[in-house]
Length: 380
Image 1 (spheres, rainbow, N blue to C red):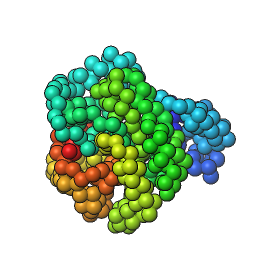
Image 2: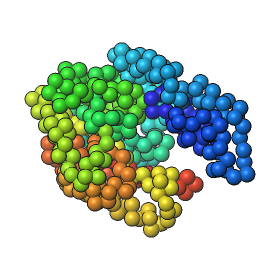
Image 3: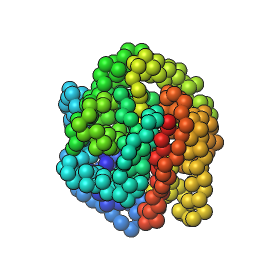
């Protein structure tokens, strides 16, 4: 179990304890939970004392929504919001917190993938699509995207659009610099403030969502890996879910808050006179029983998912944001693309450019019955 708010430590719990946790909705006493358990697991029993002990453990870990949890959350939020930097939340967990060890890891991703960057093209990159899957599974695919960036002239500003899994609104920004083991990636606060001034929503209202989200953090790590001694600033934007538009079979721009934010973002970036490079930190399909699908990950099922992924990639290569979203609508998002809002926003906001598929890959784990796909793409 992982707590997206970062209050509780990552932990594993037994199945029976997890079942009891799902029944703790605030309406049941310990005796009620005991009765529910007996019905669910016929022939097994649990004592009220054992349930009370579990409740005490959950309370200690801030996994119960009560006054103690609310107080801790407010203190946690205040500490984050009052800081000028966003700590590297996943350093030492998803990747080494030591710069030398991390550089060796990323060097290995290039060696295993596209090779080390060399030379430089004259044509600047307008945008990248890069994974946000954990480095151990998707590292070489990251390298394909960042090799293309390393071999292009450095931009003046990066706009990083990351999947906001816990974001409660379509767009969430932050003025914070992002810490990495390679140094701090500076936020362009002037441009961020200009965007915030004309945005149709309070883009900082849900800023706490940035604290644990890894989609932008992983891109920040690669950017400082490439430019450890250059101060190229960035704009971090978490993109929330567009699922309501998928269900309504409407383009995201049918929602005025989405249309107005994207037009405002483009207006400010165009007026800045800066050479912009967008980066969408996204993954594609998330399927299998692990994610709620009924069937097993058969070869036929995997091929079917790959075909949907390739359709989405083709629309992105063509710069066709509406065509991309049409595929998601047609599929009713059954492949659970983790990056639709970021990719759509990027395609709509960037100047039209030609896309190039650099690498498509996926991880299929038969033991846990899950498949996750991801991609690296460059736009010139």
